[in-house]
Length: 244
Length: 318
Image (cartoon, rainbow over all chains, first blue to last red; front, top):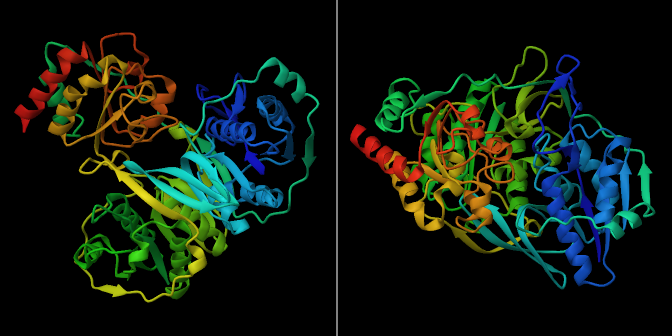
């Protein structure tokens, strides 16, 4: 079986978000970049499937410029066999999905996170499925392969559902599909020599253009209420905040 | 010309976020607002979309659509856009709506944006404001193509009653067998609960509650406030509460009028799930808990002492 895992290269979840150049560019100063946390779950599940099924190959793909290669090497250290980097800035969902679809043919299973934690589009899996004409599901919390069938548990509002579909398939993943894997020394050493192919992007008509970024307004000062006078909180929520 | 809105139904009722989508579509002033509903839904419920600004409601009452098959829904909405001469499709972000919207965007060659938080600026192009970095920032995105598909974040528009009920039009469409490419074999839903992503008030508990057996005092407050209940990631990781109650960066993102956090320290990953709340109240016995920096009101105190008092105060104020 061939598995393609799509990974994003995103700021660590504890990052402070700032923009430079008049709100047109993300400020990378002091920011550590990681494999998208949801993509990391997808990768972990792919490696589990590889370990359980001899002959399974795991390829990772990332749409990004040269600076994402350390993130891709980490995915190789975790256990992927080879990698593709599409040399382009991942500006929007349709662009990214179009690039992935270009390289996803021939794979049985295409896994990625439910969303990237930078732009939060949450639709690349659905778009890749649409472009390839195969089923796509997200957010998938459990995924088992049974012959040509895939049995999944998908989170829905206020609960979950069990869903089945045939391979090939696209899944957007989230916890608890697998435990995150930490690369060991052997993995890190072998990752250095695993193949990482760099390809130029396919030309895609721009359907959206990001004009600028903005931070939310700063939060006002907190109002503390004494533990001995809890009723005052209810009064303030009614009369001042007007939310009760 | 018309604007199409996909309306979702939960427990027989049209979701509030879908009513917001109708209000949003109406505010676009880009044509008549046509609602589309799929599956077995009472006509009387559907006809109520007229109150929020829809002038027509198309209904495909095929029982095969009672279970959400994303591909089928996408095909039906694509056809409806053509039949209704609609350039714009609006719907609410959800586990069903968002992937359906993405597929329709590809089928119709439309520009797509999810997590839209406000009406577009159309003075030069069609620029929508999106929530990004899990609520820590916004982007302004120009949707270039003639056709546009928008998936809205909660509160992108206010659902207000502005009209009367309308007649439901049966929408005859032949469903494509090959679109039934996924099969839902079982659905488990917490019934009767208030859906977290839609709740106007959310009460969440953290490790400060010391164990699942103490959730009753939190639920008492939630009940008194008609609130949904959430929890922090450690609480869901420990199995004290189900994953669908986990509020935060990798869980549910909520956007209520009022968010009350009890015994949650306020890690940045938790804040990412609640930063769209209008008012935040933090109750924690540690005066240095980082959550106080992100809150509007705070009480330093023990959850087991404060919660029963607060519940009593809420009940007394009714």
